[in-house]
Image 1 (cartoon, rainbow, N blue to C red):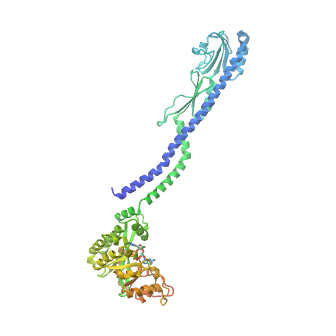
Image 2: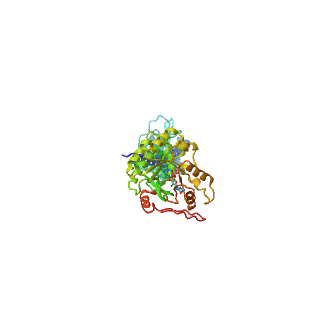
Image 3: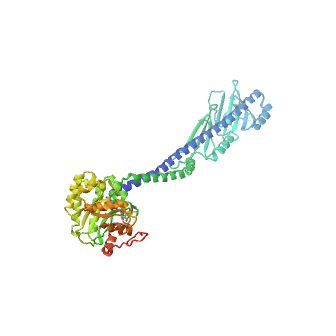
Length: 535
Ligand SMILES: Nc1nc2c(ncn2[C@@H]2O[C@H](COP(=O)(O)O[C@H]3[C@@H](O)[C@H](n4cnc5c(=O)[nH]c(N)nc54)O[C@@H]3COP(=O)(O)O)[C@@H](O)[C@H]2O)c(=O)[nH]1
């Protein structure tokens, strides 16, 4: 797999993970939050149910205490009172008195109504205690409805009992649990389970129902609150509905940040390497006019970088990054490769100049001479004059060594030019020491031209200096007829700028050379100099 593809896949994986992270985190957090909320609700519901069961127990024991006043009184005498007391007090199904294990009086049936075990439809528990309570499945009179029985036995084997109807508890549990789908149950003393609704519900998607169990500190009562899996999922879904829009925004934000981070993280060196492999670099050529032979005498190669989406990256930006990230030498080699391909079909005569820019680092590179010679060999049959355009900075470091290399290349017919002259830190002595063929005057000086007869002191001095040193002069960035006329009048032999021609791609340049390359450039100076846009 090519490196570029691996990079891209890796990047997408990062972005997708960044996007998924808030979503997954959100799903987990809402699941935990939903469980926590349900737990709190279970605790609250269990507490309320226990409180209600305790309140009923209090009533039952109070009732039994009240019954003590009727101890040893015949049933016929108290039967009516029992009936009234049992009916007028909330919760009670029946109340009564015991003699041994027999029911001696009952608010429901009056005198003598069998044994206690018959009434509660099961043997009484063996607790060894004088006070006990038990939840039961039903009573003899109402066998299908649960109840809770409370019994107090006295040492003389008499006793009292009260039965609370389980329906009160069932209704209470139902009212509390119905809206939330909870199942609630309670037991007195480990007896029959009184519950609010249907029993077990199946687990869903491996989510088990949530159980909560609590006991009373005052009575032997235990309660269970069960939240079925479907209810847990429902409450999770509600939490998700609130959280998901936020998570989605976070997700998008994180993806954008990650994408930006990745873009910045991929260094310019990587990007340039990739762009070379994918042939994203092309070369544009800007014609150079000779005022002596009055036609195009050469062209300067200028690199262009176009991304697959059509976006262009400015040369001053990518060149400076290539220089700072150690990529300028490979990039210049790539430029020479592209140029060698382009130049094969150029309709030019021998002696046509082809110039290109060189960075200081390349001049100091051990393979510099070899690189230039290889390029020269590839275009030898075109008999062009190769012009190496250097900046003033390139001459400062390793001056003597660089000078030797340049002399060697000059001996093979190449020319050396100083680019952007006047903008760097070149001392005038360099002009004498270095093997230079011509100077390219920076467009900043050309812009200073105000009129044909008005002096432009710095520009005029540079031109005079070049003449004295017998260096050819090229005026860069010539945009108007006035600038062109001014330079020509002062003996500047070479002109480059939009006034003559803009940089153009290989195909357009070849057409331009055939159509306009041999035509002289006129300089019709008006008061308002116009920008000339050839082609
Ligand atoms: N080491 C390398 N440097 C390179 C290479 N290709 C370009 N460059 C350097 O990048 C800088 C910007 O170049 P570019 O945007 O291509 O601009 C060139 C011309 O388009 C521009 N120009 C030419 N005529 C005019 C004009 O009339 N007006 C105007 N405003 N601009 C004009 O000038 C740039 C050419 O400059 P120079 O090289 O000094 O002749 C620039 O510094 C390039 O050198 C590369 O392959 N290698």
